[in-house]
Length: 236
Image (cartoon, rainbow, N blue to C red; front, side, top):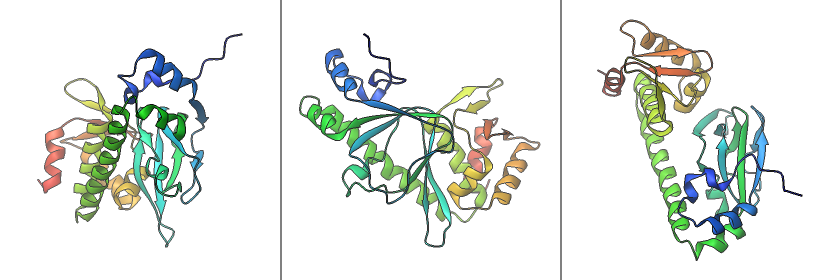
């Protein structure tokens, strides 16, 4: 009897491109997939984690941390194809932050020992893992730089542009680009440390003539004038 197909496989992830078909199948057989509903928590900050490599196959995850005051900050969004919770594999295997699905999401997991068994034969996987670490450090630097900005408009512009550059977008006519990643007001405000009301006001300003972007319910952003938004970074 044939095994039921998984909702995701390693074949769909760019991370594993370059492995020969047999090796890919062998590693894929050792992987498993989990489905999460929108709003479901995968794990909480400081929670012990099983030693697994984790990838988003479809959907989107939100990583957030809580301060001693109780204030919660969204650190980053995880999109399809991205690896996450990598640091926990090497740091006491404790979740560094809380991870929540923002939409129905499928996550593929590979036990660390199975992944390590392939590293000697395919060292490029280790290089890709190091690249993932480097990207996390770059993200942290950009986040700190953005938060250090005194101008809320500059912070918000930087977030939107960074999200577009990382997550991509789709042509929406007349040179406009619709972001693939949804950014509701509540998410944006918590990612850059401004109030919800201030975020709504700035976005509303940018939607008016001359319009820089449009905002639709649920956080659907369409960028109409990238040059104008980039000028916001320097107060133009």
